[in-house]
Length: 194
Image 1 (cartoon, helix red, strand yellow):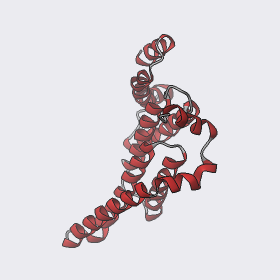
Image 2: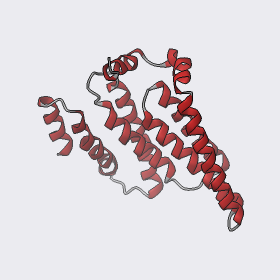
Image 3: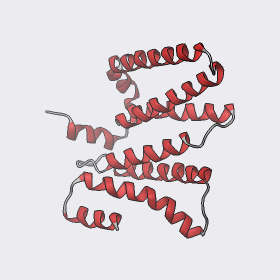
């Protein structure tokens, strides 16, 4: 009902925030709808995978909506990232290979933040890398003072990385400019003050 009402309201009122409750309702519908469709009760791990795939689908929809004068993609990006990274993060501990893949995915998100001109990717990518490093620190320094020092060093490195990113943001954008889709460059023209 929320999705239908949001669609009807959007037809008459072109206000991007209306996509927020629709995106949120879609996430819950993905859980209940797939269980109803397949007649199954999903366990925790399966629900996480549903969130991952649904989040990825929402991110693709957001990308297709991106580049318009009104920013209808923002809320789809936000809920897509929330469900995608949330699903990955809540799966629990895996092998070292799956943990490394988790870190690489979130590092790629940081690069996508520049290419798609969306800070949300930077935030979720940074959080994912931080969770990976904190998890590794807990594994290797469990029940020791070394864990506190490791977390302090990781935090300081993140602050330094944030400062370095902000200082070189323009140079990074210039270097990655060929990868930025034209419609996203056009979107920036809508929001850039003249």
